[in-house]
Image 1 (cartoon, rainbow, N blue to C red):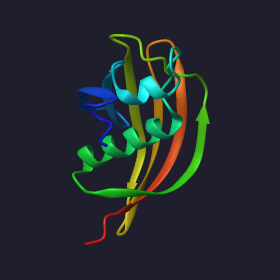
Image 2: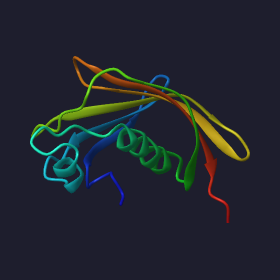
Image 3: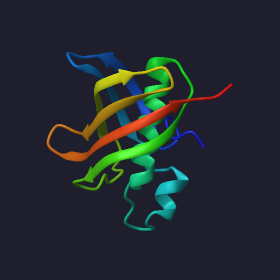
Amino acid sequence: MQLIDNLLRLISIADSENGYVAELETIPSCLIYKAHFPGNPITPGVCIIQAAGELLERKINRKIWLKTVKNVKFLSVIIPDEGKKIRYTFSNLVEEENGCKVQVLVSDETTIYAKISLVFSYERL
């Protein structure tokens, strides 16, 4: 299941000083939120990471797969309130022959949800 437009609705992707920023909105009706956790849903950490990969694929226009989570710090939970806006800020993107590395900050106006360093490999043909 693609998480972008099922768990999180993509609003925009724009270049920034050090990389790019994707603005998203939670979709509280998503089946994942009904299972994690019923009556008190939060966004699963693995979904936060998967969404970063999907957004990176859109930006670099290449298929990738997650090779390594170098570092991840979940600092606060994302509660999927109606209209909840989330920002993925990508920086220090380094593209190499076989893959890429990137740092991702997941936040909103007042809260940092996660700081993540990821390594992806390009899809093999």
